[in-house]
Image 1 (cartoon, rainbow, N blue to C red):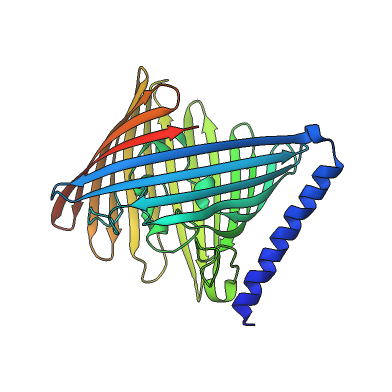
Image 2: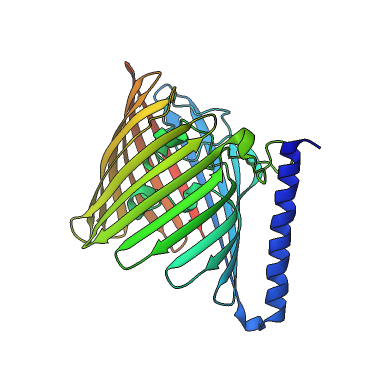
Length: 342
């Protein structure tokens, strides 16, 4: 048995053993200590470019969590995707739609055990991805361009635990009234299969390297600041710091700005800067976001204009318009997203 296979199976058995121990502890306790929660999110998006190319993208997310007593939490999450186009139709470097992921019948996005150390501290261990914890503020989550989530200085440079990938890792968070701190350590490569070398349970720093993140957040009078840094190590160490802020003008208007730089050698995306605004108008929400990214291939400017309109309690519509300049080439893409959240 090779070293990599040994690492994989050892980790699988360790995780199964931990989950089994939790179940035993739960059975020995009071049944009333169980707290089961679940959720389902289905999203479909029709995409059309200025050249007439089109794609029909679909995403299904399932998640469940079971609390045991006051301290333990078992989380499970999955995703399934279906796209009519094999690749992103925009021809852009940042990927204008954060749903694009190819066809994935079923993949784990979350399978971990959480320990609430006290009211402010939590520790997670298991399969996880960084979308659970980083760049997930209300304003960044509103936009559909991939760069409004994980900045391309991370997503374009490393095949890490970022949608639709996940990997084994440890995540720690500390939350106070105005301050928050979190740190994560993942396997250096993300996966979304159950078997083979690309299985999501794989943990082999010797060949995959390691991927670490830290972030400090501060909230004060409607203003939120986030400062973080990522470290990727495989044959060397590469640093990627980032900063972004959200400024609430009033209850209905918020501004956002962010930047990041990758300091590794031969990186695909070196710099990212973005600014935007978010508005609430009655029951609908509106937003505009523009960014600049410097790739090795070309410099890219992208602007997104979008809004969401709720229909009933669970359904929403989100039309989106993207204008993109990659090098000397201008392009545009238009989307209509329909989502159901339960």
